Figure 1 (cartoon, rainbow, N blue to C red):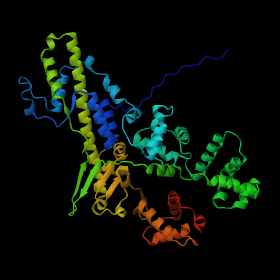
Figure 2 (tube, rainbow, N blue to C red):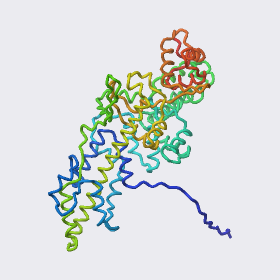
Figure 3 (cartoon, helix red, strand yellow):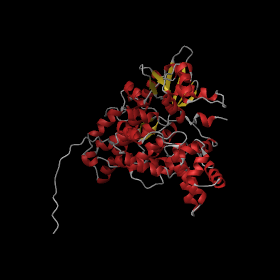
Length: 494
């Protein structure tokens, strides 16, 4: 006889933040760049007859519409008037349906040319996978963390911390590992891998699966990268052959298979995409006068202004005056009018809030990177992270991240993605903060000018950087060199 199980009841206190439909709408609009916002507004104009293009009407414009009622031109007046006859039964459930649209559905409504960004191409593949909403959110964050070459150089632990801090998502490393496996199955092969070894292994295994039959050379290539990677990267061919027990001919054939692999899968995809025409519409216009005055504005050239429909207001006023003697059809008509006007008012307010948040964020970026906007010299870009902008604006870090993602600013010196202005820093032992972008630039210049017959070692590069005012450790030099895709001195020798 098995013992009976006992049920134990426990209490647990949790703090859960729930966004209202209006807040969800604001967040969704904030994520959209200029072109997508324009399409989203036009779609809303088609769906909601209570919404019109045009400037808001002044009270004088509506005096003749309803002489025995107060003018309804102000948005808050519209809302206050509707509250008088909104009951619990009148609360429209369409609002949840409207704001719970998936990103994939919205993306299908947006017309683009055949060109697409690296991120959009991977996100399109993501939409084809059967994932939960949580897995999809984690995958999108991982895609946004990939470097330009398609590799993920941030550690899973640090990504887990970022999700907790910036997005409020408690994702364990094991959970992120599972989502990363899905991304590593995307095209081109090697995307989402964390280093060159893993990138090559994924590509070899993909080729082996596509061949559908055993291939000795593929197996040897897999062993070379998997078991002899250090000797392989250092070109110690004899050690590789001895360890695997293969002859010179077989090794050369396997080496030929490996050299066909792509160490930078994301870069190859980007090159193919760049051959197509891709239109970039700046979200911000930043003009710098000769006297140093900087003017900031939103690029709303093709974005229509919105207002409440005057005809809908008149119809609503008429139904309100006669609501004591209304038929069933009239009550249903009034409910429809109220729902549409409520949705129109919410959308107008969400667009205005988006504009205000965008301007506040961009102004903070201009203030923090003021020298660049005056001179246009990229060397003047100061260390700046999302938290710096958040602290200056009083906005949440996740809000700053949404504004910065996929947006562009047109300046006197060219069009730049907002992410260009964010730059990590390196703090020396003396507490001095240095720009990592500037350090990488100087490092690349040193490598480009070196004698390829006698390339600089990391220790020599460290000394050169120290002479130029960048006192960083040798291991830091090695880390930046690897991030830039520069091999060690031995492999740079000609």
